[in-house]
Image 1 (cartoon, rainbow, N blue to C red):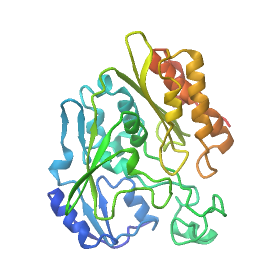
Image 2 (image 1 turned 90 degrees about the vertical axis):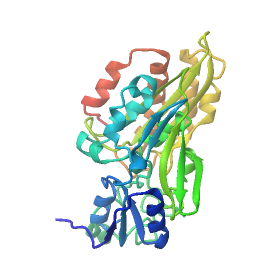
Image 3 (image 1 turned 90 degrees about the horizontal axis):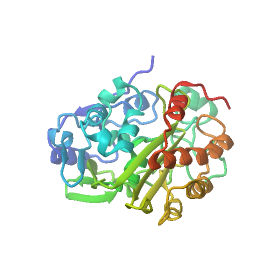
Image 4 (image 1 turned 30 degrees about the vertical axis):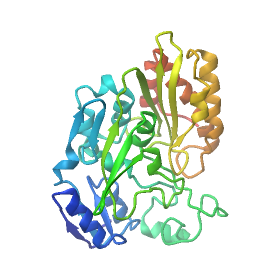
Amino acid sequence: MMRLPSFRYHAPTSVREAAERLAASPGDSMLVGGGTDLLPNMKRRQQCPSVLIGLRRIEDLKRMSNGDGLTIGAGVTLTTLLRHPQLRDTHPGLWQAVAHISTPHLRNMGTVGGNLCLDTRCNYYDQNYEWRKAIDFCMKKDGSTCWVATSSPKCLAVSSTDLAPILMALGASVTLADAAGERESTVGGLYRNDGIHYLTRRPTELLTKVDVPDQRGWRSTYWKLRRRGAFDFPVLSIAAAVKRGRDGAVEAARVVLGAVASSPLEVPEAADVLFGRALDDDAVAQSADLVAKVGRPMDNTDFSLLWRKRVIREFVTYALREIRGDDVTRIRLQLRTEDIQV
């Protein structure tokens, strides 16, 4: 049985109190919302803070509101967001992404902020302490070598958040707070393509809310490849949002590739090629080709990297076809219920 290491626990009731607690020992403290990722990591000794600052008693982090857009507190649970009465109609891509995260039990605990700040993953890193010690520790924790690519100067662990790609496609922003005040960032600006230093969030900051702009006129979707159809981390994800005019021509678009690098990757070229065009097969194929050129999966998650790179094009095609109105129900059901043979 793997046990948690010793730690001190604080349960602040306000954002300011949490920020002050964090500022008191920023290098040795971590924030915990639902704990569905952090606590297993602590049991494997991947993350070993001596202080945990719990956020569940901060009511301000649990608020959601509709105005010109949608504001989601970082402490809102994934289940609460999934059950938002209008989410499936107004933000279908976001609803799909939340529904694809883990299981109902873990969605009951996991939070929006927790998923956005999810630790990067790697087959060489996501093992218990004894396993990692036996092969010699990797660069991400206790070692100096990235076992995915031994000559790499940086860690190549993969971003596995489901929410970040779709929120980037929706043009969302986040608010970060510390003891001195608040600052805003785009969701994309929250990430670096570095498996260790994957967040731009400062050690003294906590993520407090997400603001999604008005989506009227936009259609969005989220597609996820995973080993188990019922629940699993993504090994490839595609988030897309497209705004079309009355004549059907694309007025704006965003396409984001997830789970193939240490950060989600927006591909502006794939959006630009759609501008002013109908979402016909030629436009869809050109956009899919451009995304596939950007995707460079590494051999540190499930399935072979060459096969995952090849199916990027197919997943972008599925996403854009769904946005234009094609019936892709059969494809979605196959990805959920059938074993994928490689």
